Image 1 (cartoon, rainbow, N blue to C red):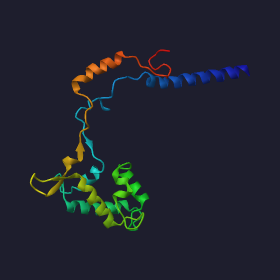
Image 2: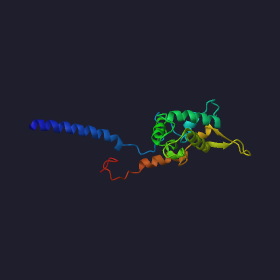
Image 3: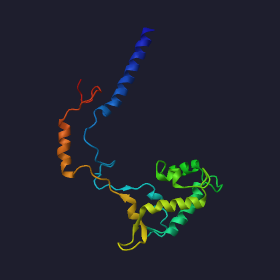
Image 4: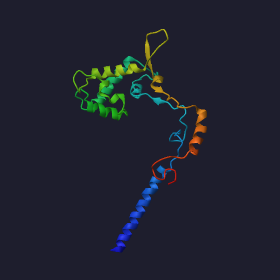
Length: 194
């Protein structure tokens, strides 16, 4: 019996050491800010897509990088057929959330029920869906020229660059200074001391 207990204790000790080895990289993480993508490429000049813009980009059927009212209406009507999963002519909030998650916008403006105003609660018709997407598309409109009131929706308006928090030349000096400073923490073994 004591031999079985000591064998179980050894197995438990090995498991604990294995789990602590898995936690070690977290404790010994680098203190420099993250500046590289998964492939190791620098993120300087990274461009992000605005919420809901990818859906509108799929409406550009003639691929001229400009989306017209007719393309929005045709694309919205076709999209409604996909979003209305049970094909009853109404999109319920559950169908909207499921459709938004399928297109990668489950936490986006497309998943928000107020994007598509409806006359009946929890039932968005095809015309209301089209109207909601047309209204949403107005966020991306820009004037054709300085003196014109005519607007256009260009795909280049679907992206933005994040603001830099500090100039590039300060990065190296600040990062070296961060390495020199000790880490102050209540957690045990954060910087190898205690």
